[in-house]
Length: 180
Image (cartoon, rainbow, N blue to C red; front, side, top):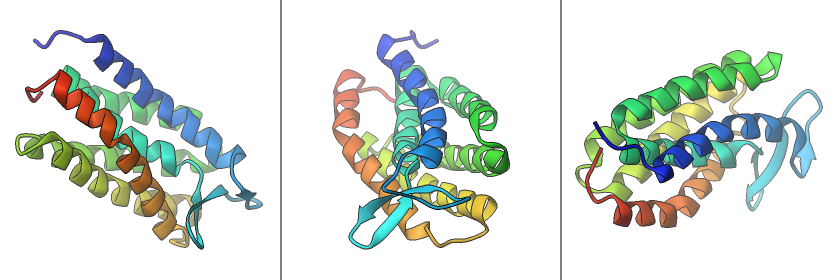
């Protein structure tokens, strides 16, 4: 059994913290808040996205870090715990969208990351996060708002969060050269 590291447990807690923070942001933080809709932030010139996208992108990377540092079982436990937290903290109108999108996107990330990590950690994180963020965006927007209006913004915003996380992933790779 893999020894529990303080860095791994910190990543697990950070992963879980992304869920309520993203739900709070989508309702309260943004440059524009749409009546009966999300608060938005600019993610590229002329492109807006619900503000929770940044934390959703970080969550995809942190789940990979949890798996890297603590093992597959902890990675799956993070998905289950995150889904439960997502359902608990989501506003009533977003419970289904938040829970389903979170669970399916994180499982998609897990399914892609697990075999790819043998080829390289950075590659695995980027590719698995790309798959996860598309799954999350399509499912969340479809269920929450019955619209794909913010799809491009969701993908770009989560992509920025993944790219900003790469230095953390590189540091993790130096700390733990063996795969989980």
